[in-house]
Amino acid sequence: FGKKETITVEKPLKVKEVEKHARSEFRLLGSTSADDNVEFHPGACSLVLCTPKTGRTHQIRRHARYMGLPIIGDSAHGDSRVNRWWRENRGLNRLFLHCLSLDLPPSSTVDD
Image (cartoon, rainbow, N blue to C red; front, side, top):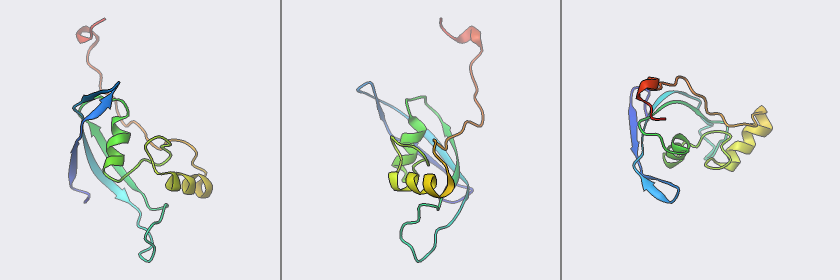
């Protein structure tokens, strides 16, 4: 998808065996390209901003995989060939998912 485009993923996710509505928005910030002569290049990657609109377990990771953009280092929902390449060639041995910001409701609106 293009840099100015936002893609919305609305795919229910099972949480404790109950299927629940889940919605995430993805926006491409930048990417590296693979060699055009190679069908699969594990070093090709994209920087994506994801805004989850619901709060489900592993929602970003699962929606990214659904889009065909697994997160580097994700052993549960990622791509093992890509993870191995990044570990062996770039020394990345952890989940490459980071939080940019976190907005929480005021404490007066949270039930105890």
